[in-house]
Image (tube, rainbow, N blue to C red; front, side):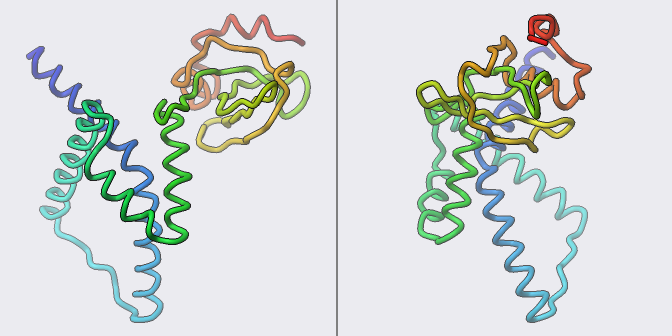
Amino acid sequence: MTELLKSVKLSFNHFLVGAFAILPVYIVVQIFVWLVSFVLQSVFDVREWMGHYLITAAVFIAVYALLVYIGRELAKYRQSLIISLFDMLIERVPFLNGVYRVSKKVIDMFRGQDGNPVREVVYVEYPKDGIWVPAYVTNREDDRYVLYIPTSPNPTNGFTVIIHESKVIKSELNFEEVTSFMISVGSDFPKSHEARNLPR
């Protein structure tokens, strides 16, 4: 039973790695699907086909297996043949290659890949003095910090700001803890003692 749980957990971990890796592909595919759907509906007035439940289940299993495979390849070799082939293909498509490159860079940053991980979490006064919020350090140039300030309860919405290092206070929070803090609107605050040390 223990071995089965370990296998399921490992499979799920590989699934998550594969899902993060495929996300830029998904964004580009969604743009392409939207364009195709727009053309078909507006020009040819073709209705979308609705699939059978059995076909839907088969597609779900196939997609899950594909993501597990990609995640396992990335975990073992730090690269996937499928992703590499898509990279080569999309680089030849104007506009979409820009969207894909930027989205992939952002996702790689949060995954800690491409030599540019989110190493630091800091507190910064935002939107005005005396109001402190946690922020991810996404880049740094000399004494300037580039910060991503997430918002609650959806941390994928937020603001990117450039600020002097004297305006930030370093935190011991990690990426997952800040994300949980934002989603829970502050009810999950693992290192709440840090709040007492923030200036008034």
